Length: 381
Ligand SMILES: Cc1cc2nc3c(=O)[nH]c(=O)nc-3n(C[C@H](O)[C@H](O)[C@H](O)COP(=O)(O)O)c2cc1C
Image (cartoon, rainbow, N blue to C red; front, top):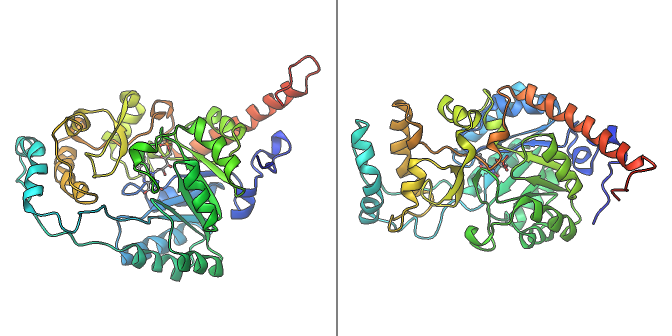
């Protein structure tokens, strides 16, 4: 295991990761594809963390606008996040019959909410290569990604432009592949995390390692800094992640609950009022395995026999229903993305959340170290 540069309690924030990126606190606000906002990203970066913007669903020109807007709000480092793999096999050939079969379990709800049924439209892909070109031309400070490893020439260009890269691993093997590709920093994303599994070597269903098991294995397997993600929502989680060998954390759901995020009031409410105590995994929301609050929509789409379109077609299809559910204020038919620790979310202001996290981690780090130094105590080392 690599030695972290943290050498005293007041220095918990000084890790290879924070110094490499040039940030005060080794806390990443996880990219929230579809629910990111420029304001949330900039707020976290201005505090001294690393704000991220999940841009995988945006066209290249929209991504360019987002980068300009973030830069107008902060001069600190920030990350733009993309998905290396943008579609699943069969997406381009999927036709109107498959569309009708997958629409069937949603049709009754769409009618009941006063909507009209969508019709099949051919899929128009957005290409990862076109999106990443915008990031390279704009020389963003940090490029983070999931669901794969970008082609060598893109990573080479990042290095030449001094764009730091953060890849995501859901297994130790994926972390090794990312390090072999010379990715600068690796997020070890445990099964507890909200949103999609970013697996790329094996199917997501076979890559469900929990954070507590994954982080030390990844820290042992690679020499680049490791960031723990999945189920971390308070200072206890951060301290535990550091004890497991992480040099930073990536937090998604607790930031999703903040007013600055792009989540609707219904969604934030579900996270903050205890309704997110039970989460589940489903392919039904988008076609790829993802975690959200166990509500009626998730349960119905997980029923045996329900046909799911390949990613991202299922995402486009389900959007027809959730837009109506949002208008009708029905949380049971929303995609309530959330991780397993959603119930630990308390704060609705991103700056207040960061203040709480950083001051509590400092106090906790002091306590752990003083316990360690006490002559009568059992050493933790
Ligand atoms: C709504 C939502 C969208 C997400 N979108 C992305 C994304 O586009 N790219 C990515 O790398 N991670 C994405 N994530 C994962 C988060 O960035 C983060 O790693 C994860 O939420 C951490 O686990 P937690 O939810 O337990 O805090 C998303 C998570 C959520 C909840």
